[in-house]
Image 1 (spheres, one colour):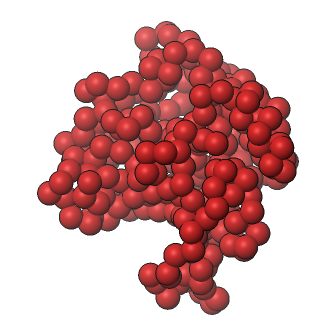
Image 2: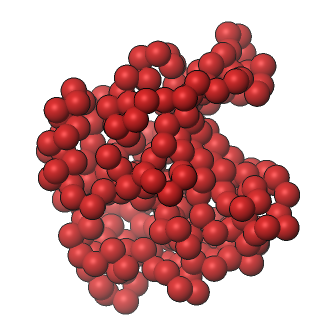
Length: 267
């Protein structure tokens, strides 16, 4: 089972612009570096619960993650993926396959920080679709603290301390239910639909610290969930962030977050 969320990927067109906007929205933004091969670079917004946002931009030419680049080109800036965390990738791979998921052999990844420090990890993905419907696992080969800075980097003027919920739009909740049960090792909890745009919803725990993923099946007809599904596939639609005690439920402007729907709620 995953021990929690690892990070959430937000594709942007320009890192300097995204850095200024996220800083203006009250986030502390840390330079990430350049990925191996030079096809992409990133900056990070890390949180005290160990989860982080990866704001990624692609260079001209080929290379990088083709699925993420394709979503950015087709649908614009915003969420393109999210990753889970495990303490033992090889054991997790074995368990996922035993539970019937088409878990692929892990592939190496890495980047160089601006200070020249090399960081290495392995990614575990599912199936061979061009736009996979399940999240991936990211497992560090080097010290995780090199990839995910804590301390002052994880303290934000807007009071955000972590990620509580990732909401994902799915085409068929019943079909996705089996996959996510196998992925999380837990039965899902059916939720009452809180919007007329939602036909059905289900919640799964991610780790033991209270974080959850919620699957949303769009209601029939034209609505924002359906539009998101058509444009971006079964990717995150909204992320709920844990804020300071005095913070009320607060959606952040999409122009500041570059298309990523972010909601801050009290702890």
